[in-house]
Each structure stands twice: as structure tokens, then as C-alpha cells.
Length: 414
Ligand code: SF4
Image (cartoon, rainbow, N blue to C red; front, side, top):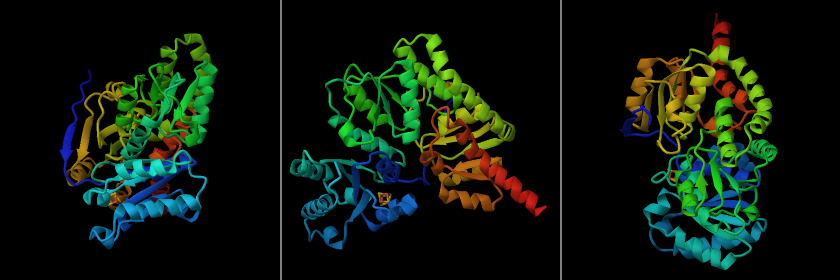
């Protein structure tokens, strides 16, 4: 169906593990707690990714596996039960507790699924206890969200299935905008994950769902197993992606085209105006995207088609062809798409190409800046509100900003 043949690479990788998902998931679901069962390394990772939030009363923590546990002197399950009981006594507002697996818990084969089942039996119905893995062995960055939501799907009620479900964690402000648009179209919509775990949407054969994020392969598979139907669509980045995404729902619910046009026109126009301001700066600039979040393909489509950028290479940790079926054909002819990573080889290609802008993780950014390349930290694309019409300009600005900064510094030095 599409002509893009990806370069498949396996080797040294420069990516986050799935634990990072906790940073945005705990903000989204206000009565959930994420207890990582791992090492000090895991605790450091989550704390540094969450930055200053560690000083507020956070809803995540790490139960550290220490030498006693590793030596088999302590029964990890008893320890975990004690930690959980203490935590829940201190934080009575918690309604869902996720036990999050890590590399150490997996390597010592700590059965967290069984622990979650046992603890769920003890603390239900007040608190539901679930388990998923965010380990670097099993998950890359945003796949942590997929693993979390997939673990939650079996708990979704079946009765009174939601007609339309939007799947993927979105900032509340973006969720509100989409809720208003669907409301104006006359489509009853629910969101997953919900803001509170007491508001879980029901899912069954009557449900149709739109993915708001491209990294939810397992969650989508489980929803389909339940009888829900996936609405194939581009992802809601930029004016074109957002319109295509909304249109997929409008078509499924047989919304008259005139109504669709009337509801979406103001947003489309605002997005186009906001993008025009950045087009002049970004058009013709060559961009190289390292693999990070799986957002790369939809973002590359947005950068090429709405901002006129030239794609040098589009890297993704994982290419889900079915979910990207509305994205891949929109990429320009001949683009290099790479799946997986061999970071040294990819760096060689990047250095040889000397792109105007490199989208990459924090681990590579400063090195490349020191070599005179301009970089954009890809993590911001996951942490910032970037979906929908109202955010299209902000999304473009994230890519324009490093180029503006570079220009200013060059002018100051001249
Ligand atoms: S889960 Fe694995 S990759 Fe992630 S911080 Fe812990 S040890 Fe490191």
C-alpha cells in the first residue's frame, strides 16, 4: 500500500525505558499511584524525568529491591505487602495502584502479576491493584503508557459501552477541546485513560475507538478483542492530521459533511493562520529525526506537509504499519525511514547529512550541538500539549525555537 521501505537496525540504543510514562500518566489520572518495584537506578530515572515534581506530594515512588531481597533473605512478597499497606494507609485518596515492573524485578523473576492479584483481593473495592512492566528490557519510552493502559483494559466495564472512545493520555486542556468538538458534532465521547479511575469508560462491541497516540499497539489489540472497532485515521497533529482524525469519527457516525465543515472550520482556520507564521522560517529546512517515542512518523508528515520541511531521515523505535496506514502514504517520496536503532551508525548518517535540525533525546543533543548542529529535544514533544487545532502553532514553534535561538546567538556574536 505504501512505497516506504524502512531501514531496520538493531544495536546500541539511546532511548528511555517505559518507566518514564509514569511522569505524564500520574498527572493525568488524579487518583492513581505508580509504585515501581526496582533499583535505585529506576528511582533516579523517574525522579530526574519528573524534575521538580518530586517536591510536591507525588503519586509515584520506587520500592527499592535491596541486597537482602536479591540474596533471597527476605520474602519480596511480604515486603511488598507491607510497603503497599503503609502507602495506602498514608494516602487514602488513592483508588488505583499500579505495581510497575522494572529490569531488576524481571531479572529476579519477581511475580508482580501474582502480587497485584493478591493485593487487589486484600484492598478491593476501595483500591484496585494492577501490574504492568515499564522495564527497559520490555519497553521503550512511550510503550510504558501502552503497557499501563493494556493492563487496565480488562477492568473496563462492559455494560453501557461508550459509542466513541478516544484512547491515549492527553493533557486535560486538549481533552476538553476535543470533547467540545465531538459534542458539537453530536458524537458522545469518552476518554481512556480517564481523569479519575472511578470514571472508567465501558467498552464493548458497540464501541468505536480513535487512537490519539501512535504507540498504543497492545491496548488497541485488547480493545479489539473486546469487540471495539478501531477507526483508522491519521494522528491529530497539525491542521491536516486533526481534520483527518475528526473526519474518521464523523464518517463512522454518519455526520453530515456540512455540519462537519461548520464545526471544524474555525479550528482549521486558526491552525492554518498559526502555522503560516512558522512556515516562513521552517520551509526548506532539512530535519533528521532520531527514534524516541513513535510520534516521529506523524510528526514528520506534519513537518513536511504543513511546514514545508525536508525530511532527511525519520527514525522510529517501532513501526506499526496498520496504525500508521494513514500516515505512511503522506510521507514524501523517497524518504529514509529507519526502525530500531544502531546509534553510532545513525550518528554517522546524521553527521554526514548535516541537517538544519536534529530531533533527538537529551543524551545526544548537547554532543551534536557542540558539533555545530541544531537540535530539538524530543522529550518535549511528549510532555507538551501538541495535539489538535489549537496546539498546531505551538507544535510548530517547538521546532522553530532552536533555529531562532541559533540565529540570535549568531547575530549576537557577529
Ligand atoms: S527499568 Fe531498567 S532501564 Fe528503566 S531505569 Fe530501571 S533498570 Fe534502568
